[in-house]
Length: 229
Ligand code: URA
Image (tube, rainbow, N blue to C red; front, side):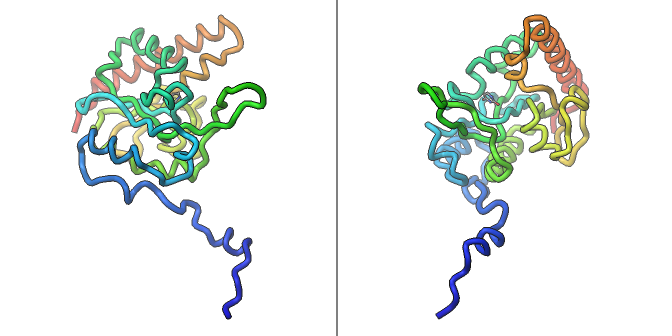
């Protein structure tokens, strides 16, 4: 009878990413077909706690694609990206920068809400996705990029920036700069709108908002310079 593998051995020999959504992604550039396939994604365990997959939204002709981290509580309930408090702030900043939300594509690196129950009450507290969860979800983001072919991809916050530009990328150091990466489109990273909501006081919230709007204006300038392939 063959010796049973020890649990430690199983753990050590397990690949970092056991499964990704790659096998589930249909070979299509239709956003509707991609969205419908993603609705049944179980490539990592996050679907078990989430209400639904929150796929990206926006027109296929979008020149700018914004990529956040993962849906929050309201996004999970409604099925739409960036509709909660961070989304409202994002909308205000877009407007100030002269960007119409209806003309851009908005998505996340992870498409299920990762949360833990609050110690007291019924609140669902956001939990940062793990590397393996981001990797499992990545084929959906790649499919969105292939379908849209944006002129510029904008990472909102460190999770998104590090997923697309590498773990050494620092938003604090390189925000607002156009990065020429291995990805076809140009990439620019800025802060996550929820970081502005967490500002210590009104004055710092205002100055963080101004800096965010300035990064978004930079996005417009960059998008106007590059051509859509
Ligand atoms: N934060 C994100 O990163 N994405 C959302 O869709 C909402 C909040």
